[in-house]
Length: 414
View 1 (cartoon, rainbow, N blue to C red):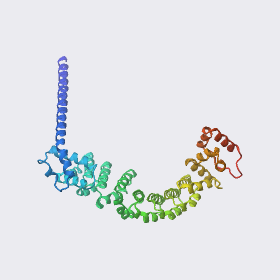
View 2: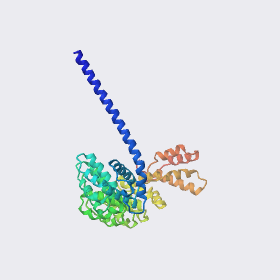
View 3: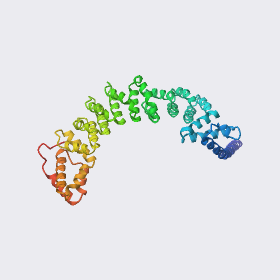
View 4: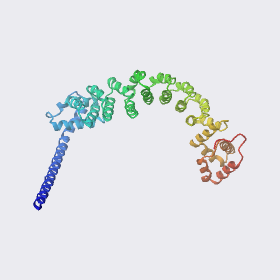
């Protein structure tokens, strides 16, 4: 038994010794390989940069002193991939030609068929940086890969390659029932920019409802003027989500000519559409929308009132005057929101500071304004803070106003 234990200990010790030796050898080989890589890369990088900066059409192989070894091809691919992330235009075209000439595109396309999903994902990412049109069809096929990460990387690669044949499957991918996937595809299409607009418009009617909502979002964020007709028609769509997204998109595009359409949308039966229309009118800044926005501040939905008040606040002096005038509205909801927006725009703080002005008309105007505020709704935390931290004269004037009885009919929501 004792002899057996000794043998076991010797065996374990021998195994650990062999494992240690293997680790040391592996580390030494790895460090040796890294040193060789650094040495070869230092020789190859200047040649690659010379090729990328050349004005002639010489292929990369003519710049190299000899046919590249397997190690050199790997290093050349690394250098070109790093450069592809930074350059554009003709230099990018030379990088694509180098990848195709070295056979890197063919190898990456073959890797798309790997049984290991991470290798397929890595190959899709590389093909996007290579930007070769030869990769479009294989990447389109990967859009149906069972692994979500492969699908997303294939979509991103198609977005980098661009061109009608690569953008079309991205537009179709907006119909993906996974909301997360649709959002990521939408971001890719937005990065593509105006090149995606024609495909989005052509495919819009064929998309399901969720796909059309995403398409409208993309068109709005791209700010494509040629999408205005579609968005105006979508304001009449039977689905409220599409109407709301169309209203939002019109605000992003920013054409003042769409003001009448958005004003009409303020009367929509669904409050999200009204809220988005009010928000977009604030972006357009058309003074003709001030009166409809004042009426929308009486809406019983908080978001509609808030967006309407915020829109008025962003319309300069005319909008601020409209908010101030709303302090005397018969509608308590409108008065309440007018106070909130005037506080958020620091208008109330400005009038509070003018309570001690030496200019009599200015001081009188400030007192009248604060009277309106206290009668209209309430003094929020910001105004209470002003009453405790402002100078003595301001505190006394504000305290006198707050103690005064409210005018008849001036009560509001507290």
